Length: 373
Image 1 (cartoon, rainbow, N blue to C red):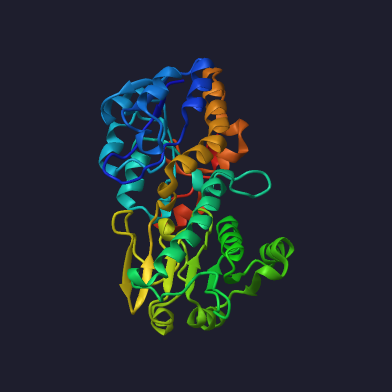
Image 2 (spheres, rainbow, N blue to C red):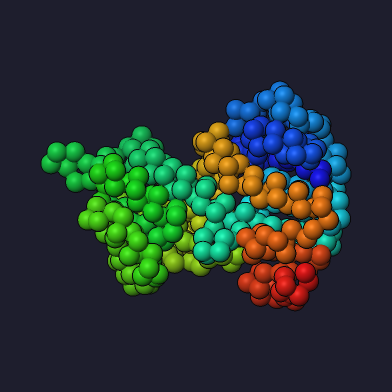
């Protein structure tokens, strides 16, 4: 099966979905791999590294999309390039279609592309294996970023995250006790910050209690309690995630206005629309802005800050899926029937929307994946 590794040349995302080592195994299994020139450079993987492992370098998006029957990328292709993709190809990416435009969705449907979102691939235990690989990095990174933006020279409150003898540590509120929130709690508590992690899922809170003991406090999330906790926080980290859906806003503009001046919001849910009313997507070059006296950090591709580590982590989890898709396709098998994780992570198949929450959001017809297969 012809596999294309793409990247959006217009976006400052520095990650690549498959490492040279993963490519080597794909090629050895008889699957030609085409790499858009420079796709791995920012992740410290040179074109030569891929060539040595058997990949072929292509020099235009048009050539890559025409060659590839399975397109693997980190950020989704821009809407203007979708017509270049072969009809009925497979596209795997962090798609976040609930936060995309209806035009984007329609273009995918028109081409009858099988669109698989890394963020919605779900294993039999209900976990998100690919998303978790980057979420844990994002959670840890959020604490590095928090320490940075609390500094005086960046307009922050001028406080040390972990405090000092006789000096109180920073108060960190983490909204969401999934893999992102737990990773953030782990990093923050290790540095000595005062951490409160909140969620509506008592099972997740129980897991936090068991893992962190008294080092991290937990709370049941409600509109009233969040408003009170946010007022006292030096840092609020939004780590809310609902599979396939646009993230609900849990922190209103009024709550933001009530927060302490020079405090910090890091909205890690921004790629799904954001969980703070005053959040808007920012970039690695211009990552933060101030609103209502509160600093906002809302970079969707935050793990690009550690592109090499993020790319390796993503590749380790993604590669087995890619290999199985390619192997089964070569044998004429329907991979979606054989791999439940990927069936659960499919937004669109054969021109039909196969994820109910997405169909409901855009008010379009929903076709269960089972009915198409």
